[in-house]
Each structure stands twice: as structure tokens, then as C-alpha cells.
Image (cartoon, rainbow, N blue to C red; front, side):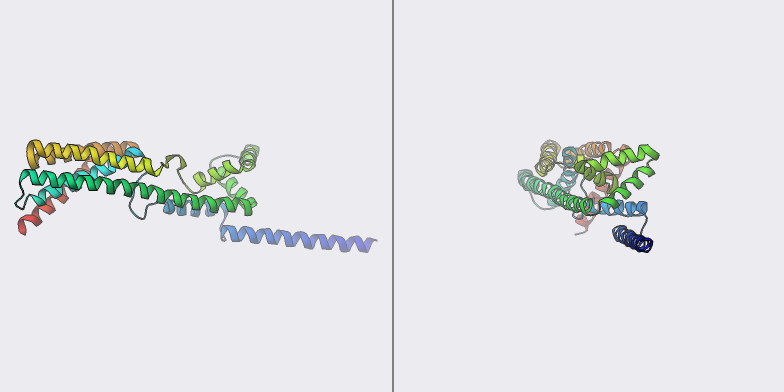
Length: 271
């Protein structure tokens, strides 16, 4: 009997050892040979790259889309007016050409902005599905990641365990926490594509009206004044939304616009 108990005990130890080895290998495969906190840092870096726009940087939001479109429209209309003024266009012909371009440009900006938003949402849904699958398959490893993440925030002891238990009990809340805390997504800032596109359309419409009104009143000088006003206001609002330095944003945008205008003017007089 004693010998039998000894054999059973050895078998239990062997099985337990194999389980620990399997769990360790699973953890190693999930963390890719890193510590939990190092794995989180890597995932956060990947999340930043995932949320960046490969087809143009555009922060989500109706107002920001309007500001971005307004800046582009102001400088584009100004450059077109400058270049077309070199040819024998009457004021009426130039005005109708600018108005026609502004109309087509507005629909382009609406479609582009909406598509960029849809592209961002599509990637977000893909990452959500991947993270949801990880929560289901590697639940113990996700708990380790979560514990390391909140320990780095200063949670300790029983409070840390209680927080982790609460988060692990709700799959939807856990998914949201892992996406925002681990990967750095800003879920609340993702607008509907139509809202984003409408913002861009409003920005183009207002800027076009100001530019054409300035042209009708004071010709090329009026467009320059309207462009300066539009770029300044759009830069101010964009900087406030992103909590950046307002003066720097205004000066940089005006400086770039001035440089582009000077290059176009120099190339025109040399032609």
C-alpha cells in the first residue's frame, strides 16, 4: 500500500510538472519571451502604429475635420488664383473657375474624410476581434498583463487583486480596458464616417465662401486676406482641440502657406 501511494504521488508530481511546463510555454508564446510589462510596452507601441493613418494624418472629430479641410482649401484656392491670374482670364472667368473647383473640391474632401474614418474604424474592429480572441484563449495571460499594468499605476496588495477580479468578471469591460490601457486606443473619439465627412464639407464650404467673397471685393488681395484669416482660425481651433501650443500652430501654418505661395509666385514669374 505504501509503495502504491508512493507511485501515485510521483505520478501526481510528474503531471503537475507537465502542467506547469505547458502553462509556462503558453505564457512564453503569448508574451514572446518578454516579461508581462515589456509585452504591454510593445503592444502599446504597436497600437500607436495601428492608429496612425497611412493615407494621411487626420484626428477624429467633426471640428478637426472642418479645420483641416479649411486650411487646405484656403491655400489651394489661393494658389489656383495666383497661377490662373498669370493667363488672360477676366475676373468673371476666374471667379467661375474658382467656384467650380471649390464645388468639386468639397465633394472630394467629404469623400476622403469619410473614407479615412471608415478605414480607421475597420482597423479598430479588426484589432477588437483579435483582442477578444486573446481574452478567450489566453485568459490567464491577459490577467497577468492586466495585473502588471495596474501595478505600474500604483495599485498593490488586496486592492490590486480586487480591481483585477472586477475587470476580469466583465468581458466587455475587460475588452475596453485592454484596448484603451494596453493598446492606447481612444474609443470615445471615433466619429461616424458621415459625421467626419460632413465636418470636412462644412470647412470647405465656409472657406470657399470667404475666399470667393474676398476675391469679389478686392481681387487677389482679398483672397490673401481671407486665407490668412481662415488658416489662423483653423490652426487656433485645431491646436485647442489637441491641447497644443496655439501661437506655434498659427505661425507654423501661416509660414508654410507663405512659403508655398512664394514658391508658386517665383516659378510663375520665371516661366
